[in-house]
Image (cartoon, rainbow over all chains, first blue to last red; front, side, top):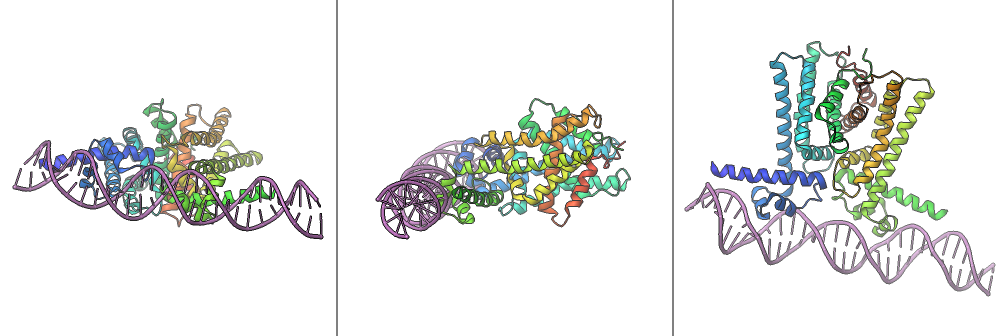
Length: 202
Length: 202
DNA sequence: TTTTTTGAACTGACTGGTCAGTGCAAAAGT
DNA sequence: ACTTTTGCACTGACCAGTCAGTTCAAAAAA
């Protein structure tokens, strides 16, 4: 419907306004009035589209992680389609992660800031979407072990977490403290670490 | 004398109260009343000891990162004293980082949540203490390159950031989503990644 | 007509920060 | 010895301001 797309557009504007404000200030410090103003809509519109400030935030989280997950999956599929190894798929995911963070730095920032918090209303939502994203990495690691590309000794959940952390923190640090570097620089450094070309690797 | 230690003890109690509350709820969502109550002092005492809620938080950040930095440095020195290589020093720092996060999970959580935020009062403070901590890692990497243990091609700032991220995220994920794992498990997984024993490493 | 948005007024709960006053141990005064 | 003063550390009621959420009549799309 036409009506549906109009609402959709309004919601999108609210997402974009909320994500930057919350990334900068945090959830509690961001007021609904600010979000409405930045989105260029009336306050009433916020409450017409979302039941509450928390609900807006939760849907924003789902929306954002959905984009990331799709992007990671796409990277894996493309690698497979062009006959790459599982290690190539891991490398492609690193790049996809960097591109995502480069495109949506505010979302990433906010995600990291909230992920490990406890006692928050959206904690369970967050645990679910996190698992969806991490699972993509874990699946590739698992396939790589089964295919003999990786040692059977590796600890899949922990290694996946470490890889995600490597990308996440390197990218955020890049944006915040070394913005002059290029995406390729960052990718090269991470790739090197992944492939054991930092510490000799025997 | 006596008075000074009394103040010190009160400030310590306030740090401990603030760190868990802010880690759970975030800075803005945590009220000064809550901090005072958890510390077992009156609200006025908070303002007797700290100029404002923000100042309390800033000093808390300095205090905590100071502990971490000291711990990392100690790990490096011990390795050097027992004749270990620079790679051994890196590994020892990984463990020291894990031990720190295990001991002060709330602080770590709060640090990560605030580190990449912009437009916050304590942003500059945070940039300074971050650099102090990261510099310890960078120094070891630099020594390792000079000593020929690491390739000259590695990008020291980016690799340092990636290593820190690897430890940080793996540890927080361990605490939040896989608490049944042991510190040794996590250390082993990270060690393997560092030493290129995940992706064959040729 | 129906859906969506507007925008301003209002409420009630909550919060950072203030300040006059309390308790008390050590120093000063006698 | 004993009284008085000093000032540090702490207290908690209080205030002025803020914010999420509500309401609603009217306008603007579609």
